[in-house]
Length: 499
Image: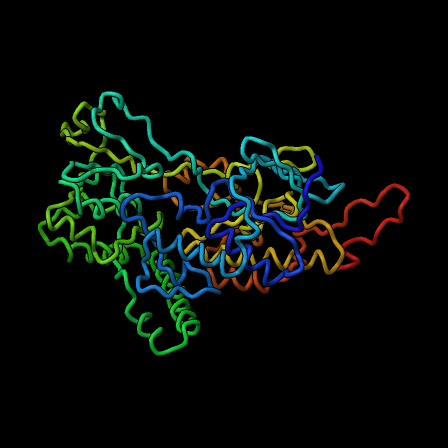
């Protein structure tokens, strides 16, 4: 069966994939492309998760696209609004016509002789093969089919319902019921106040606290600007302000952790009062921004606690029981529904197996080039956003960089761009310097970084913008080549001579 051929193949039709397609259409308009999406809908994360209150944990002025202004009133948007926004973007720019749904990418194999990727996918139980010169991996960083749940003892004894937020049942009836949400991350902090509308009581059971910061769901200044300025200009000003604040706050937190911690806890104490046990339930064991902060829009979590509709228990689970959970302290939490908001299972590139010239690539043994490519892997970028700011900020920059690379190959009649690690004195560092459990569990899957450019991640939007958008491509670490000439043909000039 003959394979189809495209200049570029994009994996994933979520926030990153739709953005990548826009940049490709704008910056490399002559290139053919296709998007392979494993699910049956646009939106990725924002279509998958359907639990109560699902929302962004970043403001939409930075989580949204730079090229499409966010015009809704709420800056901290709910899942359906974000899903609508991504779908509108795909439709408005004709990107939806390039998507093939139900195509689960299994393997991507590079051939230097052909200077092509062969992508093997499965659609409707049948194998599909597509060839492409360049691949953009936009499949996110976690498994869509399975969330992470620890091995709890006695799970089978529990007589109620156990639900993971990644697989929320449609029309779940929790009216008047006792709900225990296990976890203290963004999902738990979203679920707890959202479920108090119907539940009898909601308890957040955490092993240890997470830093929380409250923010208005609506940005009054942004909404005012949109009323007096053109939508695009108002959006750009607000976006710049938000980016600047994110970067300054992160740097301040890392430079002055004690002061930042004091301020964050002080704000919570103002909400819950001096009698509440902040030390036990809201004081983490780590410094601010060693893990991602949890956003609390309009103080909803704290308001639910003050109303008596929600509570926080800080303890460890000994086992599940018929009626709920027995804790290490001896306390038993009774529940009708237990929600395991215990995290994600990370994976690289949607679980796609990478092969280069017959050799399987172990991504955990590669080095991340500019945080966008893998050492010794040609013509492939993998979109991985910021951990200390909105995902889309970096996703957009990586897509722009990919287009620069694609255009360079075209302009100089080249076929292959491959990052080559040639540092002699390498000081390795983890790809992500967060202590979060889901990153620690997946360290062996993530590429490594070093302390030297271009093999280090800066977690700095301004630095990445200058590097990915404007930096030189011929930096000595990126090798450019043409594919081997056919037998008997005159050998082409070396890439270095062309460049």
